[in-house]
Image (cartoon, rainbow, N blue to C red; front, side, top):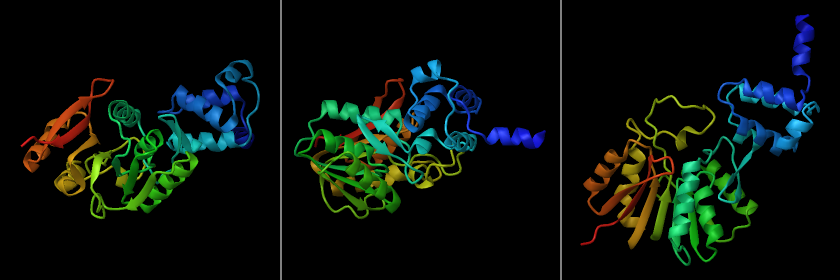
Length: 278
């Protein structure tokens, strides 16, 4: 009997059974399951209701195994939708969050990036810089990351989205950046070393930054005067609750003024910097 049961467990499952088993896994939610069904099996949310007894192919068991091992659904699917673009993701890059998309959309609505030079620092998948490049084809966008593997993903996303005005640099923060920019946008690592995170699949390089999580900001902010034009501005994604610490770093550097912006959930998630008026 146990052998037969095990064999049955490995057989492809129906749509309805896949959804039930996936939702029984801790941390897996209905939108994740519906996305997997749609993107991998071409099963719509309507199909789930009217055709739930249809059997999926053998990938269904492999995917349930991967979900059980806490692999994010975005990595299983292999891409996400971000600001109207398809962005490839894999374990070499952080999965873009809603807050990052909110930052990009807000900036694109309030700033005319036409004919401007922009740096997407710690670019990961390239979602920030490529979104701006796509919307403002006369802009010049450079995307930079310490990880060559991340740059490879960002370059593929450039091709996927048919973008022509973006180039790439491998750099440890601003170490290899020689140009000056009108705007710098960054979602740097900001989790304190040793902190337990929700997933072990995302790259440590994109997550952790020193004992207090703020080393990345110190390195970037201290070098901003060398890479930001006189009237240039910088925009950062930040962690809610760290705004006072970050503003202290800005104040100690002394050249820029920091402004904290809240996201749609009323959390302090963004920091805007511009040079103080003399």
